[in-house]
Image 1 (cartoon, rainbow, N blue to C red):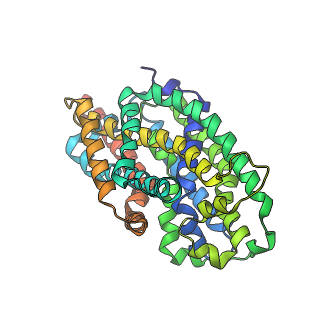
Image 2: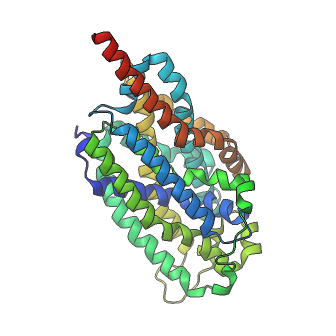
Length: 367
């Protein structure tokens, strides 16, 4: 298999862009719109800056791996028990992230395209990402390269079409903000939007050069996705106004449903958008499943890989099926804020301490 250190910057850039597309259009707009009475771009920019800081900390950790996988290096430094302790929130993060993404997408498919189809059946789409994850990193990357080109093109087309019936005065205030979002839990719940670099940190080995390349790709991807993420938030507001947008469960889906022009080839833009989003989601769920598989394989090398993915598949499917409503999806996202903040900022610092401890102990043992 091709080592992650030899993956080009384009592949890493594509993964980060796909992650943003998979996470931005469903829960995130409602969280941001409800979190502040001021300018929406301010909390977006603050989280983007936080994501850059988090990814930079991770990149400092990855530069110390010398071609090893992250968890393997940490396990060699502090042992299996302590590695399991500090990595348990990571596992919970990946697990809940897949559950939320799968269940949210199934809910939207039910509401927009297949109203009579059981959620339990739609959750079966997890089979494709699980099979792709089991196939390995290179099949995921090949899929990501192809899907990225398709999804970016059609997403841009949808956004441009959505600009045709907006009223710019509805977006005010454009600059004024009083920081009220800092007191709103939905602002912090939106942290899931900015964790793409976490996934790529756990899916393979890194060298000093590849770690810097990965961070550079992520930094560029963040800058490129800011206009797209802002569009998911501002287009509903510029169409329905701030008060109505706050009451909408899925503002961007409602925005797509409101677009109606005689010259549009696809009559139902909502169904078209949901179909395009499936390409984003399949790749990202495959990456998250692959990350879970890599974690278990590193911590327990004798574990059978197909069994790991089968158990993960069943656990995610069962949990997602037990979630009964959209409000429960939002509640899970809010309840896991602490886990995501730990994953973003605390774990990479602990990882650097663990690597430094292993290096010091190794030197002392060698004397």
